[in-house]
Structure formats: structure tokens, C-alpha cells
Image (cartoon, rainbow, N blue to C red; front, side):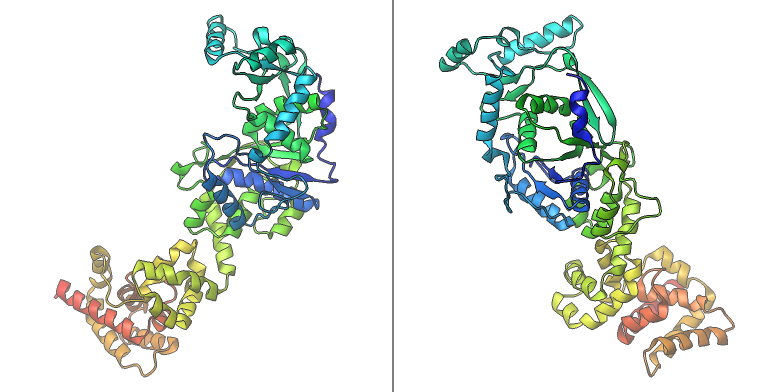
Length: 505
């Protein structure tokens, strides 16, 4: 078979009747590399007014996990991917789970057998292992081509089947010529047919292999563009051969490179997070992860960063997707997430904060809800400083509770100076005497005392911040104190004064 047989199928400029699919095998959590591939399919379909199909490839009974099917659908919905056809929504090519399409694969296998493009193979596992060992010992690649079974008359094969001999159905791969994958991203990739073994179509248990089921499904579902991970590139020549043997028109193929961690190895748990749910639990917003993954290796301009899904779809170009692996940068993701957090209404973030603060023990949920107007203002003050939603307990938890425990070395640094030891108790007295606990009055009291002492205000601001919040960095001190409230601030300031006297006399 020469490359001319494949050329017409891979024209990415043909954007009529676009149909794409995401077809996960439900064997575990939805990996961000997989969801990025799903995103590329989704954006391509939305750009061209096409159809995005979800198909569940669940024929591997040993690895199938029904809970993983629910997790895949849940993760896709969470990140904002809605499909037009799928297991739950149906469509003109139902069903969309491969275990419910077995008759289709068996019929296709019969067509190939009838056409002489496939054959029954009765080789046992022991025979296949012996073949491989013999070939390797002779310095050859073990490319299995059926031995005596490849040309066995159909009647003889039927007799073996009727006698109960186990068998597989194998494709009769051409032993000459080449199969060329005209890849939208990578260009032409050539495979010599003599290097392809006669691969299994139907296993001995009567279920299809991945290559056979995927090719039949993509053809029967009228998929126009197969956009998938580049780990499937080596499968593609086999699927092209199946397409031709069954008389199907080829789709366009585009193989998306992997997503790597900072160490240039495949992104996994060892990098901190790898699945969609990992990032959700780590405080990443769905729209931020959507935005970041959709741009990762997609060939957008360097100055383009924050888009709505519609804007991303409008700008998406499949042929601009990079052929090189993409490196996942959590710092960049955090920057995108921070942008989206800043755009969320403080009232919404405050609602998220209530159970998180309650779980951290700073207040009960009832107390927090009674204090909701102040919590909203706290969020408004701190929102610019949030990177992930999981930052909330640490970022605003100190606005609740009473006395704080101070880190010793930092306390000594803030209160060890003679001026602070002399002036801080007087500052506390002035704060106690304020008629109004407002930002302006607080600032005037603090700066006024510093001016009287002929010192810069920072000499009082820094220790007071540490006393009131337990940290050296916060939002503006006067806004912070106003939201902390008179009672809480003074309780902590007095406690710090007592601790100062205990430490320094």
C-alpha cells in the first residue's frame, strides 16, 4: 500500500461536517494529559460548529473500573467540557460504550474473514512464545505472520472451531509496501508493512482489541478527525489498514504530544498532581485549569493568556499545535488561577471559605455565617493575595479567634528593640482609648505616636502587625485592624505586651 491511498484522508482544511471524539479507557483517574487532548477535540469542534463525542472504551474487562467511568464524566463536566453525544446523552450512533457494541465488531470481523483480509489463528500462547524466542535468538524481530494458519482453508478452520479449539482473529497484514500516516501535526510518518505483524482483531474471548474496536467505531460514528495522544501513533497504521480493508473513508489524524513534568518526564503523582481531581482538590478553579491546559502547546501567541472558552475556540488551529512535548508549569497555572480568583465575587469566595475555616477550627460554621458580612469584607481585602482556594484558611484564618501563639525568633526580632519595648505599651493604651475603631483613627493614632517619639511609623507598624496577625506580611495594617475589630486586636496586643515583658523584663 503506498502513501497515495492515505493522502485524501488527512486534509485538515476540510472543515465540513466536523465530528471528533474523546475515547478514554476507564481504568483510573482522568489525567491532565488526557483532558488536554479532550480540550483540543472540544475546541476544534466548537470552532467549526461540529460535534464532540464522548465514547467509553471499556472492553478491557480486567482493567475496567465502573467508578472510573463516573470519575471521567465528573471531571470533564467539572472542567467545563460538555459533549454532544455520549453514553448518558445518546445520539445517532448509540450506544457509546464499546461493551454495548460487540455485535458491531463481530460483524466487521466476519466481513474481513469473508474478504480474505483476516484469518482464524489457533496458535497457543506457548507456540507464540516459542516463535518469539526463536526469532530473537536468530537476531530477528519477532514479527508474527500466522504460520500455517494464515492461509488455512476456511472449512478446516471451522472444523477446529467446532471442535472447541480456542482461536483469535488476526488481520492479514500486507507483507510489502508501506502505510503512511499523514499527520496534521507531525506531517507524513511512514511505516513499512513488513515490520507490522498480523495483529489480533478479536481476542479468544470474543472481545475486540483496541485497534479494531477504535477503527470500527471511528468509521461507524463518522469521525472526521481523530485527535489523540501521540502514544497512539504506532497504532495508526494498523487502523488505516483496517479502514481500507473494510472500505471505510479515512479520517484526518492528529497526534498530540505528551504533557511532561518540569523534569521532562511524563507528568504523574510524583510531580504533586496529575489528575483533574488532584487539581480540583488542590484549590485550582475549573476555568483556570481549562484555560491553562487549552493553551499548553496549542501554538497561541506568547502574549495571549486569559480567554473564555468561546474565544479559545475561535483562535484554535489544529495545525498550530506543537509537535514537541509540553512541559506543565504549576507556577504558570497558579498565575492563571490567581487571575480567575480575582475575578470571582467576594461573596462567592466567602461561601467557599465557610466550610474550610470551620474545618480548620478557627470558628464554627454557625459563627461564620452569622459573621458573613465581615467575612465578605475580609475576602475582599485578601482576594488579591489568593493563589488557590486552598489558601483561604491560612490567608484569613487569623481574623478569627483570640490570643495567638508567636514564633519565638520572629517575636524577638519584632520586640527586641529598646524603642519598641518602651513605646508599644503606650501604643496599646492609645488604641484602647480610641472613640472609633476606624481605619483613619487607627492610622492617626499609630503615626501620631511615632511622630511624637521622632521615629518612623514602621517602628510601630511592624510589631503591631505581628502582634495582631502573627505574621510579618499582611494586607494594609489599618484595614486589617479595622476588620479584626477592637476587642480581638486589643486582646492580642495586650498578650504581646505581656510576652514582651516576660522575655525582656
